[in-house]
Length: 582
Image (cartoon, rainbow, N blue to C red; front, side, top):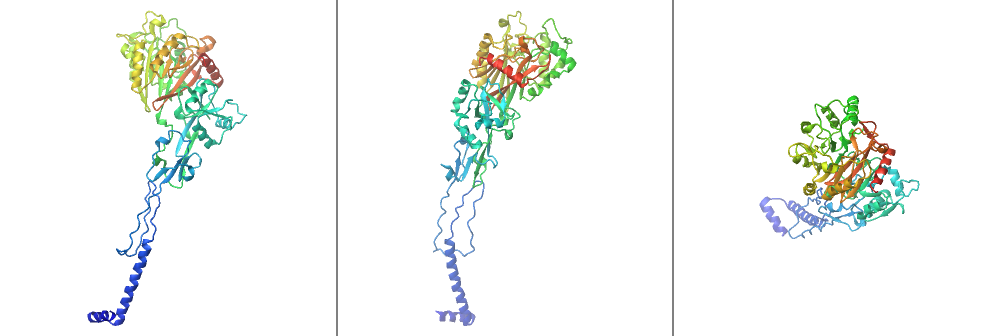
């Protein structure tokens, strides 16, 4: 064979024999190299690196070797990828779990030991994946308003020096486990665990009792206590500085963003919260008006104006018509026919008025022309009004608001001549002249359910008979109860010149009377009861009514209220809660 190859080569090219030998040796070495390289290629492992959502998978190692002959073995397919395991702490809030969606390549772990990634509160040094707000709460008729975070932690750990409350803190099992992970285990006698749906009733029947609950569990029969001055039902709430903001941490050996799992950022979204400031009697007449003339039109708002203007919806029940013919005010007035100078509207502007209630007895005191003039003033300012109007039909129409996703409707009426034994009763609107809306309980009992069917929370306000007592009288209890039975979320008395008590009926919050906002009854009532008043700040969240804060006022003169001192406030709350039967 060598001879024939040599002869053929010589014949065709004339190359010497040594060249032929060199070519033959090169060919044999190349053949051996190809075989070795093919064995190396087929023995290289296939990468099984996990694919992390949002990241490219690793490329298999490349080779510069020549392709394998067709007779060489074909590489085996890649084995099935093993999913990464995620473990959720069993104490996570119930609203977190349903929102989770696992990306491809992930599965839930049955226990923490087998997990690659965990969602817990264990490591507080990492950035939180979710921040959950909890609230320190007590039954509504609770006098203390709050404590410090140091006091709360001392109670948790059983520090006998702290005497904020002697009873154990009430929590459900999930909250206990969350706070244990956050603060450490509580003292055995410091906490009492109950099912979540039993906490409120138990606390009310075992007063004084305090509890810690998730923000989403708030409802009006709870009073939210402050911690270091912070409250999650307020507009100025700062989650980062709040002691009961619990950080849930997603941690492990793989990079995974909380958004990829659908973890909610929080259980409290500030964009879903609406506050409504509800007030009592405003009547800028007599000594109130006289003081405004000499101390400034906005003088009465100096101490409390910001409370109203910071609300999303600030309510004013102005009983008095404006009139360009209104005479200069005097400290006293023999008759009870009232009017206000149109310039006094600046006081209502200063407190950020958003809606006007017109159920007052004196709305028609200066005749139809002044009443219609007043209505036009409100229209020009863009202020909706209710409980009164240019005629009976307009007067009874609700006013609807939508704020931060919350739908809130205002309705109101005046019980009128029959109850008050006033004949004639010119304050009430008719088909032909303006005035306040006459209470029609048949209409109310159908209109409130219709508003509820539209998704509205109804605030209903009364101009009712005036009583100078803290305890609500039977006539008020009956009528307010009828409106509560119709489905109003809040029923409030705008007629009272001194504060009245409270009630919860048929799921409704009832305040029978708030007292005066801007009216000259300093030292008028027995025990100076007319010197005190409330602003009720109602809180709505995600289409639910969840809380009310009682803001307590004391008049310094005939025109200006101020915030009470803690001692004054405690005394008033004790009196009114007792008058409420609590």
